Length: 466
Ligand code: FCB
Image 1 (cartoon, helix red, strand yellow):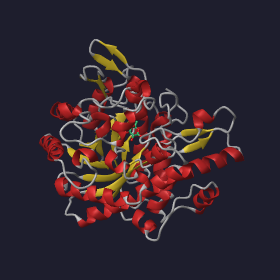
Image 2 (spheres, helix red, strand yellow):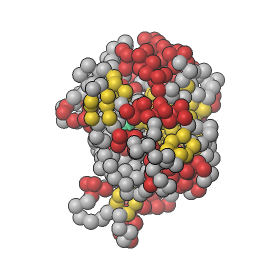
Image 3 (cartoon, helix red, strand yellow):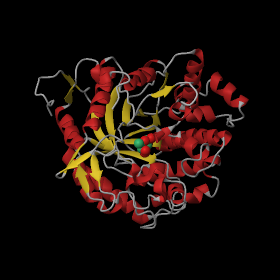
Image 4 (spheres, helix red, strand yellow):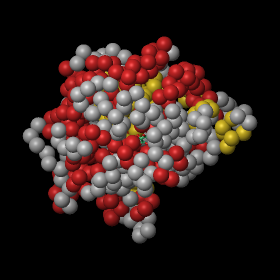
């Protein structure tokens, strides 16, 4: 694609090698929540509970991917993606969470792997993208320390079934979701309390470690890693009070995972604060070594910077919000990708290749016009992030891929069908798919392995707004 005025703009090349793809998750797209022997997950139960999701519309049908998988893979092929990142539904494979394997669920994923292989698309599989089997929630869910063994068993089953089919395996997607689900109560299963939230987060780290060790014990091919989201905070006004808020909020969010994964455990700052407010999770002998089990790659989800300002009244905008609650349409700053990749490289000394496993935007203007969907803001957003990532790679960070969130408009958790992240438009009534302008643009980027940028620095300008 050339810029609108036809002038010859500066171009940059993407790193080489660099994997380009799109991402989804099982609950957000599959639907068929109770078909083919699938057991319910905590998200089925939560979204079916009045008052929990926008407009009280549950995610039962997702975007009907379960029934449209072959044509969805054909669409992926038409984009020319190198790789497709998706997650497995734990309760489709093991309806009770442990024990009996559901053959119909296995067959669905085998057909998906076959279709991807036939299309020459590599599979990047996430074991857990937030949809814990309800049967396990009934036994205490992420608050029960045994969840690490339940997850280890599930992981071993998945490696056994599909271990020769995927290039990359991630244990968990954004384990901060356990804070939203067991601390804030805004995600499934809707529990609250700081100790509860941090306990669920700690158990996620143990589960991750168990799944890494199960991977090493299995004959699975490919690589094992984890996906963590980093919403780097910045003080709008760098007063000592604001800078402290930035430190505390970063400590409670991404550092709660990065420190155990790469620095051998929680920091003194974390332990002191959490002891003081009574939210310190129980850490037993061996937990730290388990969480720090060597991995083969690190997945970074990055959407935006969070602006922190202690001015009264600004808390709602800037307070600690993990996961996907930020209103991305309001403000975005691609430079944060350069900064966070630098942080992972220098401060955490991440010893393995990094893949950007999610980046995308909703709430940008989309106009429908004679069968086309114009979403220029999304193109600008992705261009900005790709530029920042390419600069980080040029400056020595080992970043080897980028996955756009998302392939399809889908069910956005507690926000239901109210936010569209897809580069393919989905009619939420008929589930008809229509590629947006961003899909054609991304297809060209994938083919050309380069992109034009506005002018040096502009694509990465801090504080750029939509
Ligand atoms: C991430 C989630 C993904 C989606 C995007 C918008 O936090 O991993 O499922 O909700 O945000």
